[in-house]
Image: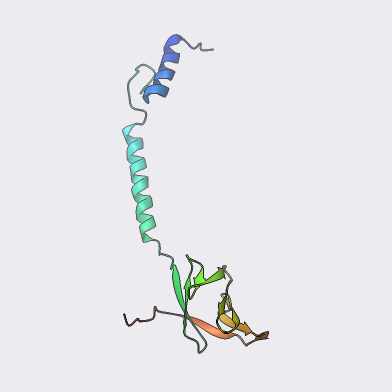
Length: 138
């Protein structure tokens, strides 16, 4: 069984305080990480950055044309539809508008349809399609 002497303890304290560790058992010099390890870590960092840059960006805003209505703007980041607060999940988008009367709107993201309800009457679902960002005059 090996005994821990004053030299071993002083090495341990030097590692903790200064950030160096012995390169081998005979010397007290050497950086904490060998050059090969540093190069490997740098190479992994460069590779991870390159892979992240090639991933497709996820859209934060989508534009939908449902039935005969105008284009609907869905902001996934702000969770709004046409600037109205919305409940947005992976399977549905729900919101309401407040004009002369309250209109509840529901988009089924799985089926790709929009359902409108107002005055207690629910209308037949209309198909929805994604469209490009509409042109603006300004």
